[in-house]
Amino acid sequence: MTTAPDHPALSQALNAARAPVSASELHGSITALASALAPEQAMRELDAQLEDVAGSAADALRDLARACMRDTQRALGDPDLSYVPLLPEGEAPLPDQAVALVDFCRGFLEGLGLAGVGAGQRLPAEVDEVLRAFAELGAGPVMLDDDAGDLEALTELIEFVRVGVMLVHAELGVDVDRAST
Image 1 (spheres, rainbow, N blue to C red):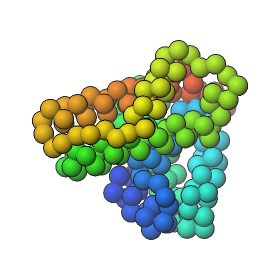
Image 2: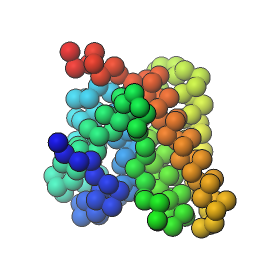
Image 3: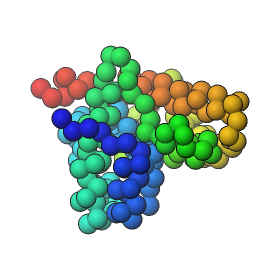
Image 4: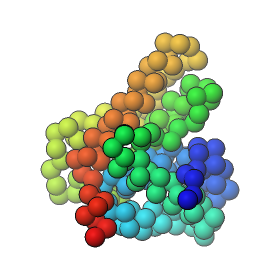
């Protein structure tokens, strides 16, 4: 069993590939693809996205991103609700974590666009509301300092995003059991 990459490993692979996206932005896109597409289709779309952002350098990045996709698909389908956005660890400065959350939201919205969500279809009101909030967050910046009040605010924003992702997945997601049969 392959272990999913952590934020530093994915960041390092993206930097090595000279990809113009952050680890959190890529994970946002991966999450959206995993939320809206069947597993095999999500992998194909991820491969195409990596080719677009990293060209031939995507080869070294592909295995790591695919492991991240598999882990994300599993977490989104977990009845224990284990999904969490891939962000810098808690010891990273709060402003860096806030930028990563903005990147995640931006990547999530881009990933939904790649998956064709919203193209000629009416979205459920709850999904539309979440996506509007993600668009506001994705427009950034989220200004935070390294103090306790801002830590609590960031924690609440991350939880809002986590729950919003799971709502979008529940409303738009492909039933993995049916998709694999």
